[in-house]
Amino acid sequence: MKFSTKAEYGLRAIVHLDKAGKKSVSLAWIADKEKISLSYLERLFASLKKAGLVKADKGVKGGYYLTKPASKINSLQVIEALEGSVAPYECVTSGACCDCKCKVLPIWTKLYKQITKTLKNIKLSEL
Image: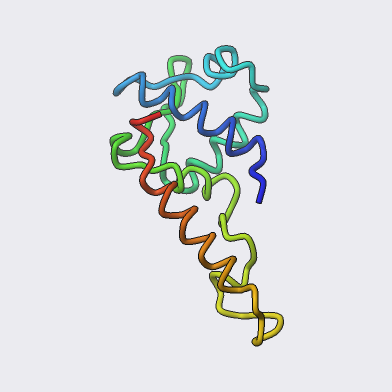
């Protein structure tokens, strides 16, 4: 399994919202600090907003802020908002399998459980 720049950049960017406290942070400022394309960051934050992790203030002094304390947001929530499920294969979470006698499903299931457990335990406030 390999995460894309969506997860990397999204996590790097959303950390700035935690550091800002209750103040809104502009995406242009984050883009400049992290050397990330503003248009790419806008797409990432649209996904984070859709997932309910961030909200936006409109206007000249607008920006984004977290919807809840960073200690209540885990890295799995951020990554899944940006990348989708971290399951290595769909059969791990859906129960549907291509071959019901699949001998490797237990491996993928164990891997998925370990990844989700680890990511759930890493809070945004710890990054």
